[in-house]
Amino acid sequence: MKLDIEKAIVETGDRTSIVDMQPVLGGSINQAFYVRTKEREYFAKINKTASEQFFLAEKKGLERLRNNGLMVPNPLLLKARDESEMVFLMEWIRSIPSDETGDRRLGSLVAKMHQQHSNQVGLNEPNFIGELTQLNSPSSNWVTFYRDLRLGAMQELAIAKGRISRERDRRLTQLRQRLDSIIGHKPSFSLLHGDLWGGNWLYGENGQPYLIDPAVYFGDREVDIAFTYLFGGYSKTFYEQYGADYPLEKEFEDRIPIYQLYYLLVHLILFGESYGSAVDRILQKYTL
Image (cartoon, rainbow, N blue to C red; front, side, top):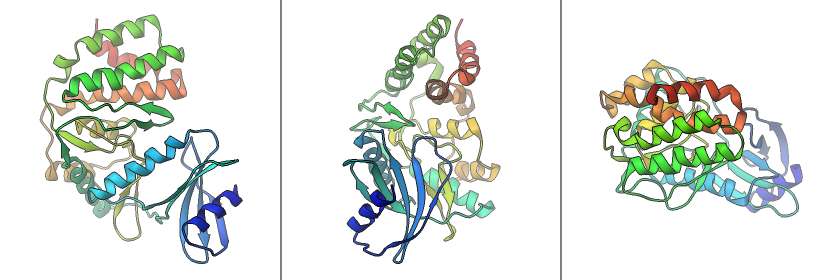
């Protein structure tokens, strides 16, 4: 493992030796490490089993965000698998606890991201949500996209994984059939982070928040905001600043459950029935 990281570091042009290497906790998919050489610091991700497209999608997502003026760790090098692991090297951002100023900056950063628009939803290629493939075929219709490529795709996968009962399947099909009236608005197509739970941002020593681990595409910005409410990790100050920079529609709160449903289905597939009751509550809210 250390040898693979050393090989990747050499390819960046840094030919100094590793003087410190420590595991970094927080992810369930990859092994992650803080690495320091005599020249610089790195964040290294290792994966032994995922396809080469897995880290490539993350790299492209970070680059898309950065190219739109957003703060992300600089992706340095993706070394494809040879005999062993894939290695993804990024700039190391030394994280410190956030404060009210940081929360306001984070609110503005997310608002700035959502103010980048496209005339189509989706993206020109798939990426990943957790370990699951996230389909992004471009469309001009948000409801169709969310119905088929978000809820429908997870419904099919949940059936294949044995995570969905006949009754759950029936209600989800019914919900998808009435999705146009449930969503009830025609949003602008914003650049989305796509996986904006509270663990996917950090506050750097330079006083700036950074977005990490994106699953980007264009869609209704309310999806990102709905996810921030699902597991917490965001302060009242964050929401106040976001609303000041880019106000949400008054009816947004009515759509929070329908947009959280996608992420709950993802977690149901990945982690099992502990998320089943939350899925069922939303299905029962919108179906008979």
